Image (tube, rainbow, N blue to C red):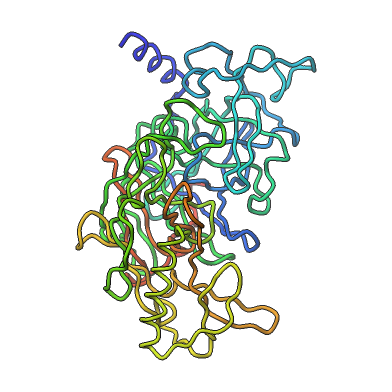
Length: 440
């Protein structure tokens, strides 16, 4: 107990609320046309400098390429052996440097292991503290910037950026860690420990990330509050972390949910139930959400049962498969597929949670992906075979969560999901990012 009190006091001293009173924050989220991954802008350093960072739902701490002209008048390092170093980096590494002092060079400095979940690469670098600014929001528009004077993150070498969305300078961490972006924002401004994502499928129009607010979330064209459309399911804790660098006894920072079955056109598919449970000893199994994979990934036996059921139900719609396009295995000629306001007219997919009446319905816009290249024009079932015995049985990827509002309530440990917001008369690119007059 004395240690916990000391740690709380030490960490709390690093989060001095900005004079700006914020009811929440709203930041645009863009989709990269090449990687099909997502990024958002943060304002780091003093004076504030915009940095575009990949949105990683499972990362424990933000990291930034500091090798590329890091200039700031307010950066600090964290000494080795301090309670803060123990808390953020488990005191696993201590940095020393024989070059002139700089953001990436200091002696007796807390070392961290930033990771790239896209390429599954890691590096060793140093922890850093500097100013962070985010646009405030009244849940319907953006406002002025709110500041956290001492935001904790990690430097990283330029090489770690490989595979990230274009122009991304690092990773914005959205994981369950005490040092993720949403948690530090919540703590810094005494706002609810809650964030929400509404990702746009468009590579030209932005979606939105909300911080420090459980709603309302207003979207055009009719000021629709999407927080009223949410259904809730518990967020589960995987007791074994899946990071590249192993931290003994540290649970996963990723978000798992208790999927119990999958239905295609309302009919359950056969699944080995043990695959859907998280193994407490090795962390294998279960279902997680990820923004570092463009499409959902299913363990091989689940994938086969799912595609077989989808093919069978699609035949009833007079759809006939054509040559598949990697990495997909089920594709249909685009000319044969009828389009509706929720995408291609194909069988619905239901992700069933804790009971049959709690399910996340996936329509054609999220289950299918269109491929037009080299004279080919097809709609493909946008799920990928993850092989035998993957660490996680089902990974719900970016394409499946676009134009869906997801709320991560870390206080109540629950996920709110809306299913397609198109059915509510809006899309995720319909949040108003025009700053209110007088807040420039």
